[in-house]
Amino acid sequence: MNKKWFMLIILVVVMMAGCSQDEEVTGEAAETETEGVINSDSSETDFPTRSIDIIAGGGPGGGTDTFARAVARELSDILDVNVNVVNHPGAAGAIATQELMSMPADGYTVLATVSDFQINIAANRTENYLEDGKVSSLARFHDDMYTILVKDGEFEDINAFISKATSNPGKVTIGGTASLGIDELTVKSFEKEAGINLNYVAFENAGQMHTALLGGHVDALLEEPGPAISMIEDGSAKMLLLFAEERLEDYSDIPTTEEMGWNLTSGMSRGFVMRSEVSDGIKNKLEEALLEALNTERYQEFAESQFLHLKDGWLGSQEYETFLNDEVNHYESIFLELEE
Image 1 (cartoon, rainbow, N blue to C red):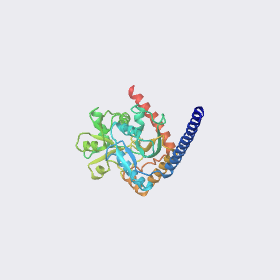
Image 2 (tube, rainbow, N blue to C red):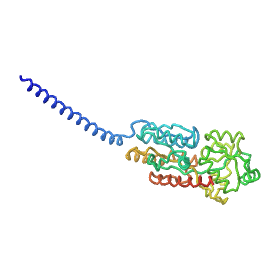
Image 3 (cartoon, rainbow, N blue to C red):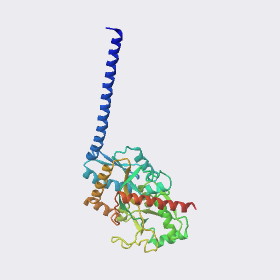
């Protein structure tokens, strides 16, 4: 065969093989892309297929931990998978938020939020993940109530506490969790309303400050009734004041901030957020499961035992998102006042 014709045949064969390979690659790519969409849709339909982690920004036994575990128990039954609580205490919850942002945005990691989530944003301790569109809210469960808690036998009532604080400015100690978090900011507001000056002592978790109170290392605590209920019921500690509008039926002898003439009825909000990149289908499924968890008989019994039932705290995802942004703005204004 003529050499020129032989080379031409070889060139045509090579070109045809190349075209065939391109078509095969293109076909495989299209098939892979299609499979990606199918898998995405399938993941929403099948979700969840494995364990879910709830990140709690407090230590074991504290309010955030107890709340997260009660919800996890209900979600496990509703979603038919294990729901685990993973504790990442410290920095007023900022460490827990950073942990959420380090995890895949697949719907299998949820952050249990308290008011410190909003405060950390307002204080520039964390990014404004809400404004940046990196975090989406799922739901708010509760808006808790605060109390002034003291060791039994130390103070007869709130008036005795105020009297001692007035006579000893800056010397009466009151404990709370974290520095410049929701606890300390609430103490600042309490001082302003009551016209006193206290010495705020920050603890890492509820267990530490409960031990400090009973050991006589602090005069009082700013606490929620729920985490302290065992001390209240066994008589080792007692409430002097409730940050509420009306007295509790079971503790009718405890006055409220409202009747003392103090504008202090806000408490610790509790809810859940997750990475914004998670698909809407998975977010909706989790929001629905959370509402179902809230309304189970077992959870309602837990809420009542922890005094979480005193206010109707539920907010859906959109309402909770609005609430969080409003809270950030509110705490930003408080920090500006503290700087003046």
